[in-house]
Length: 290
Image: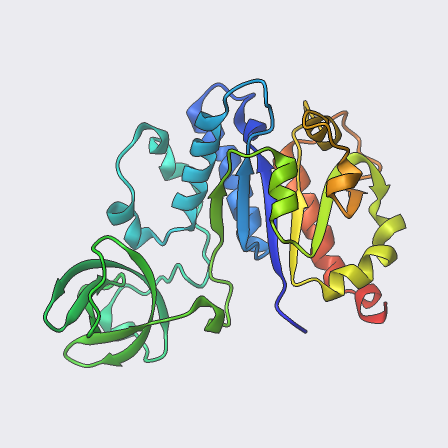
């Protein structure tokens, strides 16, 4: 079976009801952890209120998610000290394959993949920090300083030699990318080139009633986007601001918690519930037999 790439679209207002930066950081952390647990390839942060400027919220969410995704040993080199990262210390570690615990040269293995940042260049190539006590050399290539790259260990002797790696060749989940959007949601979905577009809504069809219909599309889809709204403004209301109907931009409108016991479900709660159900669905006998 082909490797399916899954993206989630998260509204900027996911943090708008929280006054303090510490609590905002904690909520974003929940989203980042969920994305890593369920191997999400891309998180799209979009403005969901066309009546106000949400650039500030979009930036904050994207910054915190990007900081979480970056290996700890690269963060000081790739991020400036800025007020929005004041509570970054409460962000939980992702513990993904690209966040290795090994920090010593002797623990490196030939063929191992490591995220790196370019530090300097010389006549032999580019020196890169791969998170151990000594810089590695990327030979015969001159790259811009401060650039994050993915590398593969070629040799570990008196020096460490690496080569550039393509993420597609890495068998493990290698983190998510973060996209900041200023376009309306309808345009994002329509122009994204996704094979399958799933909107989540409490007014949608219960997942159990639509699972078999979704099955064939899910199996053949190489790229899927899951679209989430905010508790105070669902996706139907959101796209109507663009004079669209949700059924025009989504292939399926699904209610994954059809018998909810609360009046509203927070976005981060909906993300966890939806990804857990879809994860079980994608490996179930229903999917294999459809």
